[in-house]
Each structure stands twice: as C-alpha cells, then as structure tokens.
Length: 507
Image 1 (cartoon, helix red, strand yellow):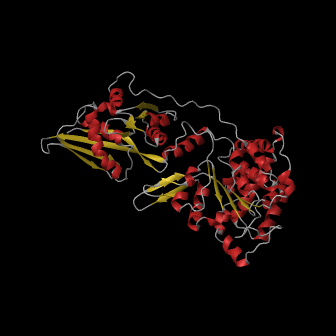
Image 2 (tube, rainbow, N blue to C red):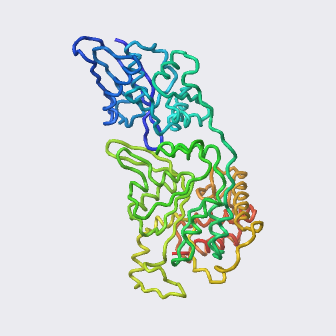
Image 3 (spheres, one colour):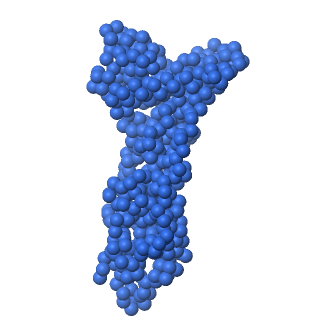
C-alpha cells in the first residue's frame, strides 16, 4: 500500500498554514464503490470535498476504481478550513491510485478549489501561501490563474497558473505550455500622495501641526472638539501625509488583503485607511469569529485606523486595542484555536468634549451637567488614553477662515508638510532606528533623544506639576524627539518639550 504526500495550505487569520495531504488507496471489491475516509480535523467544507474530489477525477479520466481512499491532513491537531486544499487532495488521490508518479508532487505547493467538472476556482490567500512556501524552501506554487497571480508577487517562488485539472496533470507530466509560469504583475511607480488635500481644511493651524507631528513620528492622535470643528476632515488627511510604504510593507499589506479576498491586482500601492463605525462589534474591530478572521485593526496594518466618536465604541473593544497599539500584533485565542494577526497601525481618533458636544464652545452653551461630562469621558480608560501620544483640543474655525480663498496650487501647504514629514522620517532612518519615534523605548530615547539641561528641568517640573505617569513621560520625550526632527535638530531642548506638552494637553 503506497502512501503519497502533497503539500497544500489552509488560511489561518492573515497567514497560511502549510498542510501535508497524505493519501493511500486500497483497491478491493468490497465495497463495490469508492469510499473516501478523510481525517485530520477538516471543517465541513473540506468534509464535503470528498464528493467533488471523485467527480473531478472522473471528469479528468483519472477515475478511482472500487476500494477505500484514505486521506489524512497533517498536522492532525490543527483545524483545517476552506476549499483551498481541494487541489492537493485531488492530486494526492490521483498519485495514490497510480495515475501520476509520486515524484511529480515534490517541491511544489498546490492551492485551489476544484469543481466537479475539473475546473479550478480561485481562492483567497495566494500571497500568504507563497510566503509560507518560501519559508519552507518550496520552489513553486501551482494554483488557479488569479490565485497564482497573487503568489507571483513574491520574489523567490515560481507561480504557475492553471485553468483546470487537465492542465495541472499536463504540467506535472511535462507537457509543454501547460500551467505556464506567471510573471510578477507590472509595478508602476507609486502614485503621488495627494497631500494638498490638507488645504481643504480651512484654519485649524494647531490641528495641522498635530497631523504633521503624528505623520513624522508615527504617533497616535486624538482630536477633541465641538461638532463642525473639522476633527474628521483633519483625521482623514493623515494617510495623505505618510511616506509611501516600503516593499516589505507593501507585501504585508497585500498579504492581509489577499487573505480576506480583496487582492488589489498586484502589490498594494497605498497605505490602508480604515474608518469603522462605532457600532462595529468586538470581532469586527479586533478580529475573531469562527473561523478566526482579521478585523478592522488588521485590515489597517501599516496604515491608519480612524475611530470617530471614540467614546461610543464599546469599552471591551477599546481595551483590546491597548496591547496591539504597543506591540504591533493581536493574539486571538479560543478554546480550540489561536492566531496571531499583524496590527501595526497608526491610530487617529476624534471625539466631542461632552455628550452635547459644546463644552467650551463660545458660540453655543453646553447643556451637560458635570456628572454627565465625567461619565462620558470615563468611557475611555486612563491606560487607553495614555497610549495616545497626541491629544489636541480644537475650536470651531472662525468665519474668516472658512470664507477665505484657497491658496493657488503652487503654494499649497500640504505638499510642504509632506516633504517635511519625509525629511523627518529620513533623519530617523539615518540614526539607525528600527522604526518610528512613536515606539522608541526608554534606552533608545536616552541614546537617540538626548535632553538639553533646560529641557530636562522643564520635563521634571511638568511631571511633578501634572502627576504624569512613566508612560506619559516617555510619550512626551517621543513627541519632543519628533518635533526636533522636524526642526532638523539632534538635541531636544526646552522648546521641543514645551511644544510636546502643548500637543498632549487635551483631556
């Protein structure tokens, strides 16, 4: 009894789990038909694939005779989900029945759904599977055309696309032209960022400064102000000021999109911007469900997550953001399954100062009693608030700012801001930083953000006067480092600490 093995992949969150399909066929007259036994924790979709498998083989003239076909999915203790394993199951069965040589399956990962007529259907996760194949040293991936095109985005893995099972058989037996290797998709230059959109927001000089500092240092940002102050308009401009993603970041962004079936027909060219509604569930925001799936937090990986009306989000969901905002990933654990999803995001949020929205507004009187204001703000815990570096209060723009003519294209301030942000990021790279200022630790701050004497005295006085936590102290130092970068200075002085205190004053 010959046991053969074919390599496939099953999606797990935003990544892929390599799965080895073991197959063994025992021909006998009892039972008079082909019985398929599938083990290894398959989900209902995989269990139903047994009928598709037999019909697809018959359609390709590789019918199995009477007997028992044993299929096992390794590792046996991990749940396997989805239809992506169909192709590996079919090919392992064909080899076990003697229709193909066992050597045909070596060094290849197979991915794709197989119809009862033998046609191949695309499945999500082609790039994630290619990344797993490269990690294992597997040289090539064979998949349906669209899925193979995703895999072709990754250097180091040969991606071959096929339209049906007959083409895959031809490729494995050496037929010329069968399942051709796909070239990487054309990768034109990244489109220029529309940084001039910042000029659409009239006035709000403090808000624009906060955006510039946030973009330059990767800091989290919270706008607090009355309705109509421009909080959401400003927040939505942050992604326009961020530098274009690097090649590695583009692969990470595309891997997430691929895993949820939103492949952008090539490598992603822009950073994601996600703005979930405050009624989004915990699983929708953080991730979860059955099977575990990425949430908005992971869909915003390497981009911006915008939470408008921040206190209206559930307390449970907001508290779950604390660890991912610091570590760059979210670990989801359930009784029978767990997954680690990427979540390196830049958070920007907006909220009113009170339930009616007019606390401190000179134009409209606030109608909220003090206890209502305290209860409203208490929806955001202190530890969560501490993790947002920049907290800026906005006032409604005066009428003169709203009616003034926009600047001509050659004088647009947004483009200048984007250039200053790019220069600040370049200074951070030249210092040898592993990431942006927003995630510098204490030792790194001592080395990369030395304080002048006056800056140290001002910082110590602020800590004592405001009873700042150690996390708030480090946050101020990180902001001051970014302000100094924008000023093209190596040392952090009292001006930078003073500006950092002003940018962290709201709430």
